[in-house]
Amino acid sequence: MLKISLRTFRSLVMGGVALVAMGATTLNAQAKTALERIISSGKITIGIHNRAPWGFRGADGQATGFHPDLIRAAFAPLGVKEVEFVIADLGALIPGLLADRTDAVASGFSITPARCEQVAFGEPELAIGDAVIVQAGNPHGIHSYADIVKNPKLSIGGSRGSANLANARAAGIPASQIQQFQNTESSVSAIMAGRVQAVAFSSGSVVSLLQDPRVTGLERAMPFQGYIKPDGKPAANYSGIAFRKGDAELRAAYDKRLAELRADGGLVAIAKRYGFTADEIAPDSVKAAELCADKL
Image (cartoon, rainbow, N blue to C red; front, side, top):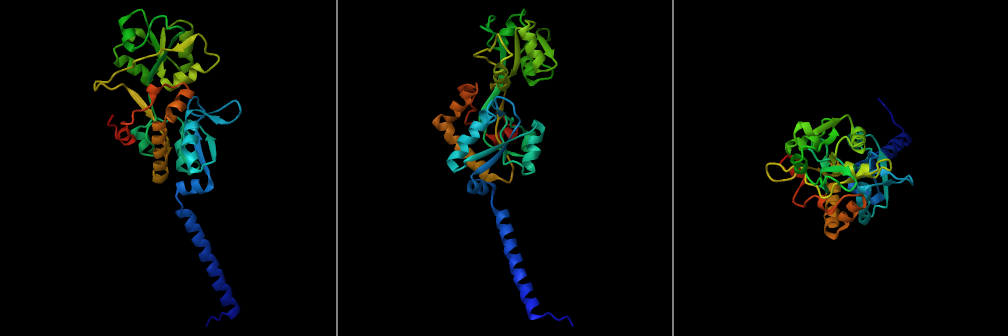
């Protein structure tokens, strides 16, 4: 028969108590929600992909941009004093979020049904429609795709296969007035050389391009009306911050603060800081759930 001395028995008991206590501590740590952890630590970690105007490293080495400023404004009142920004390639941001390397992704993501299968989006902040770059002073008076349709001497360029050129075609611009280029850089080079009179991008891309000191003699056509869909709504993508699906409390806390920033003008102020206009604030009636369900 196995015999255990009193001293050994006591050691086993005390060891068991220690293991139970350690297990309880571990369980408590696991039970803490992302929001509770962030509030208790005063720190949140955000993924960005280093692209202006969304989120990028500034000249001082600090993260700046529309989404970094929005994150700071949203979470500071909750006691978050430290925001750590992790820079990654665009395609690595969602995998990094799902691997718990970040708490959210704030980098100009459009809310799409495909992305909604992986993550949960906060409510949209910006409506990102088409925008065009023209020669300084807009000598041809281009303020819509219709203006190009009306004048067969005008041509518009853009990146091959882009949604922006698809919208231009849908708006009635014939193929003879559309030039497709390999990438953004070649599109910009074409208008700087006068080979086209306008180039179409998303409004966020236009904001970024015009901040490049190498891009000169160009401006954004303002105002500009892009493609109007058959339902009467302008074609647009809506940006939002991505969270893990399990972090519902964190997302709800962000949405509450976003609504407050929308109401007090803070959201507009941040948007204007990075070249967006008040008209590009997403309507409060547009909801992430509808965008995920492709109902807009």
